[in-house]
Image (cartoon, rainbow, N blue to C red; front, side):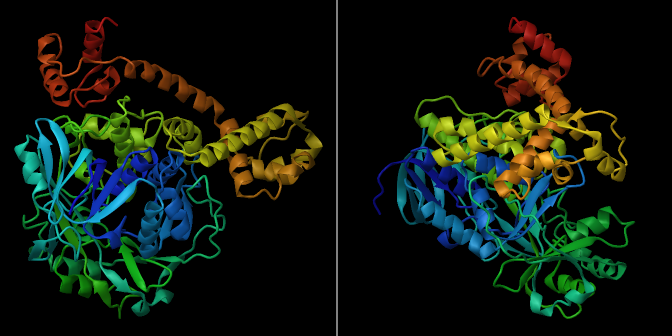
Length: 623
């Protein structure tokens, strides 16, 4: 098979690979996407959902940058919920259940409609490397394919090993082959390779579940969605359900512990702390009599259900016996058992913040190959790798998002400066500037930057400008107009808020935590114009309210971010030997040489680097 040379070859068509291909192609690069099975692009191999705590913010950031994950999620969702609505807006996180089969098909359709993307179904067995420069890939069928850059997004496929009780066999996912050769070659090139583990639960035949014994969990009445660009169209939703384990279930599962590959040492990789298997939860939280489970539908036209919280690598007969002791599952049948998978990853300290490897120029890593877990974490890395590979081809400097600009920036900075010793999952608690990184303002933070790159297209940019203008108009109206006691005191008494004795600016009244803008609109004739707004209008009202209510907090965070921005602007020498600075502590010299931070800000976030060491570096740099 003859291939013309490509600008970028993307290896793997999971969530990272698909976003990498989309970003690079939309920036004008000629891209080849190589995957083992074109039918499973962006496959939801674990839970059939997008978003969640902090993850929903990432999906909105991807959308603001011109990525496709938000659009695909909106087009294929079967249920939507905004999580943490009872908390402040920094914690609000959109999440949706998706039709997993339609999700993959929609991703493929979008990529096939994207200019500059070619596809090839094959297995990549190695890289073409000359000196310290990547030159392409070698595949099982197609031979050598040349390219200027390569992005590896191999997920769990690198030397993947599936475990079910005492059985174990090679595989990247259930029913799919593992990939061999790449890890071994990279190790020979000097890369450090380690192992991680993840898992997935049984898939259940919904026709055999007694839903009358479960607690129904419906979607939100108001569906916001993820994408800033497409009007939302979902008319109905499918419910999820809540079940619980019991002591009897736990006793049955314990019978299989002696066969567990996790407990008897056959699995060497570390699993995700925040998404443990059911056997791990029983062992770690032995004082708990039960654990909550979420029963999630996998699509509109299938009866397959995902049992969230019941991930397991125990023998299949133990899983089956325990499942049938859960209330509502007495007659349950399963489509397949749960399993654990162990796979290779490359500690991310070996990368630049652009996601290019330090050892081989033109080679980028994205997704689980970097030690992360989750579709959203993988997707945003893929997008950033695609952007930076394209920028490198133009000889432009890489795009590095800061910790105060995006959750994406927090994630990548954590990977590079802190490394991982377990699969990395994003949480709002990881972001010290989360009041600035809300899900509602991702477009304000990122669209203009993406538009300058040529990634976000004109229609996205125009919608962002329209929204910004309308938000400012609403804020100006609230700042300039007054509310009078006779108009609002009934509402204030009802909400147990102090009555007003004289006129007050509407924006001042909105600062009261008990009062919402929606309630003011219902109570005040002067706000009649904002009733019955469409989705776009409601988003603008919400954004204006958040900006007014949290203005003082946002200003403080902006001031702190500005101080940190100065550290990020202080560059450190490339490939510098920090052992030459004797006034640094020995631990700091060791870690600075290992991680080779590019800025003083990055150095300050490396575990073990003290403020005193940062001062020493600042003095050394003449600051």
